[in-house]
Image (cartoon, rainbow, N blue to C red; front, side, top):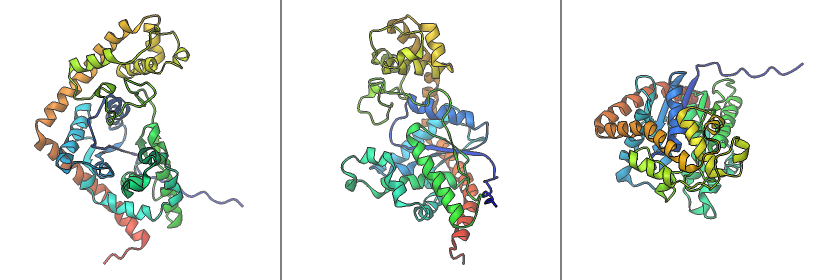
Length: 344
């Protein structure tokens, strides 16, 4: 006699993701996240938040944080997220995130968190000086996802481990409390171009908001001249572009620029090489600059337009928070009942 497998989650498909308000968004965020959010909102119910709870795991200037939240929201809207279709909200406006995170802190195991490589990378040799929040934020991430019973989560490669932790927490909760299928085991959404955009100064390092060199990234708020200049200054090598991707294996900067071109135009990198094989960067970079200006220029203009009307951004965030609380409340109520909390 074989054991009957536990029933799987059978609720609706939902997507959830968020971006921390910790600096200017850039080309990597746009291609790796925002473009995907915009596409996914038309495929399933979508929740996109500004991760201000996560942001304060490291020091943020309280005088600037509110404006930084608005800037991320403006980037969402400028990239094509429609507040009539997707739920856009600040994480801190939904207290259930933190409340569910505490339950999950008691479900997750210390050994699971000890294996999280991002904490080790960020803390370095001085982990005793870091906040407890930085250590435990993958548990809050699990609460972010499971509060809405999200089934699909757009993630970069650096977040895959955290999504696996979310799946482990969901499975353990379902098992320990005898509620099979209560939480879904969410799947990563990583396909498509632009999943990993690298620095314009170092093709082996991911494009980052925290890089001290502004020339390492194209910010969404950069104007046409700044975009073109950064492309012209991007690090390359003296060799012409080859015919195949295999020949780019040891040329990280060249591979990155070809990948950026492909992602901006919705093509494959192989297709880009077919067009530009044999040409040097003196010919390729101007074409890439023109393409980047054409694609990103309107996004920057839209961002500036939204940021000029903070009251409208706040209205959208308030409406999104209302919707998020409405969806998350019954899930948290069921969790409390399942755990055995006093209900009054």
